[in-house]
Length: 497
Image: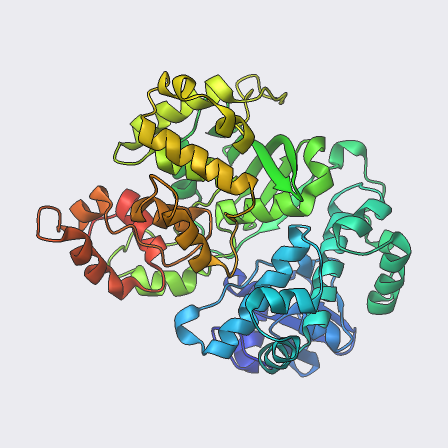
């Protein structure tokens, strides 16, 4: 078996299982030979004997050996594992990029879902992709893809009352008959057996997302609260004292736009986020859940990150990089934030939303407007934008960005296309290195972005006023690679060095 990044042996895996250590959730799975079931290390069932345990670094590998997922701990809820870029060779990085591409394609409902299509996106042959995938992950790409589809279907069956024919489509199966056949063959269960009894319609969107601790919830919510726009989003604590966030949410899938609302409630004791969302978002639920994971940075491995950054930022354990709810929205807000304070950028954004945002019905009277779409801002007149206080240079940048997205020459979602996207961004008028790095950090989920020209960063590093401060800042930040994005968040809002 291939070891997870922490390189534990079987004895170490078993000790983590006995401790139900949530820090290892998603890094490995435990299969029990006597039951034929595999679990997460946080499973609360009675621990099996060590001699009956096998350890796998992925759900796909466990399933390829004939084990089926536990119905109690639900392996489909395990946080994803992101690559540790600095510690891997080129072929291993390629294999992990391919696995992430497969996971994202399933969740973002992208077609076609084929090994040939994934190989083409990565710029390698299908044969080479199969070889390095088997070498580093122990299964074929097609096996990995099938597991991701099944686990997605299993989550939707467990957490929603969506009809099974719709679940089959959302999880990438050609028909309900195909889903039934694969489910029975792989799990020896019918899809309906995963339903939680008689769910009612008010439980339609009672969905759970998990993360590995430590997770500093307050720092993430403070970040969003500081930038919250009236009418669009809110951050608060409810009557039970549980941190929560609600906002109007929009997502584009296959050229179609879906708009609704989401509410996220953190359950810190259980290391999870409870999700409620409007019916209008249910047709693209897997894509919505993936975007939420990115926005909350639920899959970060803070053990590795904090190990590198703790000496310089001792009081920032578990801090995450807040991502984007929508790539276009975050990119526009980055443009409006050029060379101004967060408060000034917030004022401009509020004016933009108030003037161009579309009305949306929500359970909260204070949440009423969606962020303007690319079409809306591309067609806005310079006079209309100018009256909001947006200068001509930023008007051109916003409309060029909208045009690039409308013509699909720019992709602001995470993926293996980072360098291509950064190059495309820098070619747009009014977008320089600071804006591109900010977008890479939040929209593209690049863990090593570093806006060296940022005034706050230069001040915190003590290089402001020196000759070539951006270069000086970059040299200081080399020690934080490959996690400079996480250092940036700490420099902006955490301890000084």
